[in-house]
Length: 494
Image (cartoon, rainbow, N blue to C red; front, side, top):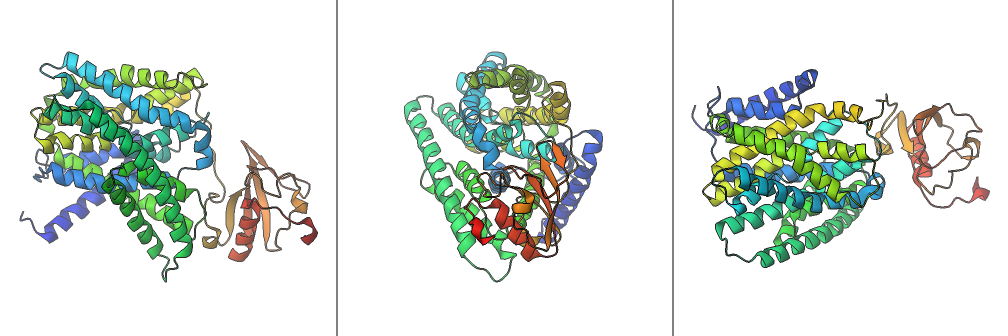
């Protein structure tokens, strides 16, 4: 088939459609959709029935960078700071010390068991696979609707969203040492700390700027707001990278800041990025599936199984337990965090760096990394609900009524679920004392794991989630403002 624009669009649309259908059916058999996306790409590649010859690590790396920005930004937007704040330090330690320990332990093991691998080559491979994958963690936890106790979900999502910078910097450091063993380790470590500090600071600053722009820039069409946020997202990445910071960390923190502030058209922006993040995951995994040659992966199955088993059973648990040594967490919580060491697209993208650099064992490293990611998603991804149940860290699935409290009430016409903010003036007062508009009523109240039928004497509490039915958007907006505000209310005005 001739390489033309029409043929590329035709093949791409067919692969995308097939991937979506495969992903929809995947969970009927307990298989994560990400594996199906990889499989479709592999089947379409040079060794598969499609016969598409795609052999460009540079293009795959560029697509990975574009996609990872979307995936991390979407994950940050959907992460509640209120849930992250109590476990922030656990997440920070896991995403730094935990990644470093995983890289060192895995690198030493590879150096010892893989013939011909130098210490720096082993550490390079360990660094590439050292971080948990945000695309895998976000998609598997959310698509399986896994509800976890002990704030485990925010820990896992914050770790996976913020640990890629550490793995990236370790990969670049070790790649430089492989290419130039006499290079300055001290200088590389200094650059690492600069990237983390600049990336973190830039993320917060750009997040604040995004909130200001979203609130003050008025656009003629609502559909342009997500497009504007995309522009700000990529500007955050590029500008941070330009000044020596880590762009991925900046993008995640900026999204975390933006997602936890009220902005116009918030629900449409969240929905847009959620859908686009899925699109980017599909494109990313399809591309990586096309890049790999299954016939070459077969040659490293033995080594791949050894390294994968060591990571799952030794390196990840050891790094988690050592990282969380000084935090009070139940043993079963730490064990579950150890099991959620999902590797996915990010390690495969990082494995393209040695290919582009042209080091001797780049092909072997890439194939081992691909095999590790595949086994991790297949084994750990499919067994997360089972392990959560065994370790008694999962909660019964609930049928939710209404909508998420994060939804912008300007987009709602009939029903909305609102969470009463801490410090709200109506917390501690009865429903009868709250000046609800005539066109809005509380139909149900959810407090913790209990559902309460509401009467006028029911006392509202901070953290309660109330289902509000209303006759129009204006009434919904008034109730939303009333229950989410933390300003004092003058009782004489009621």
